[in-house]
Length: 311
Image (tube, rainbow, N blue to C red; front, side, top):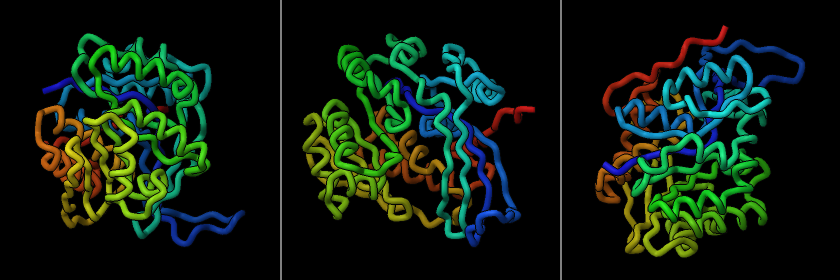
């Protein structure tokens, strides 16, 4: 199996809910559920690989508080070379709603300080050669984004394929944000966007057409994946042919991080030399299992074990 790594945002998620209706300002409501857990796009992908029993590397950072130490606990030896930013740890509060949707409130915190020197110091380049690294949280990791060209140059020099999941821009898909993402895609080999992100970025309401439009911006051997939630996923491969898979019908327990779980499972299948269709199916299947189990489980039946809560 080819090596895997994830680069980007690891933060603390506090999940509360369900909230219905949205409270009036100045009032208080009670909710039935709360969970404090490791989160962030990079964190969710890494936990998926861990749950699947796979070897991987992760480059991230933490803040200089108790939450920072707590995040380190969640990744053990893999976090030994993570730097400590001189700010508080990024905290994301997710409010769930009865229809399965959620609203996030996130502090800027430590993830904005993650830099290219931090990333290269955290990774063993020799072990990653010939593999794939997923780049997450592009619109949150400000310092790293400013040094993306150095990251892409490093990847090219070491035969490392970059998979990109930017996440949703804080200020939406403005013309400036579209231009940034298109420049990044020109140097990436795999794009991993959800349906709304794909159509907004490509300015095309049809997901398949939007995927083809994004692939035209990328290297010839690129893959563009569109994650479609309960409708499964589709992809355009190096041969420009469209491949799609359906999602199984499941009782949803928690959709937070579903796209990140998909990313990890899809890339793991590709790294195992499985076909594009088989890889899409792996991503959909593992993500479906994750969102329908609480505590969260993956294909191997391994339960996600959070670190002990900070006191």
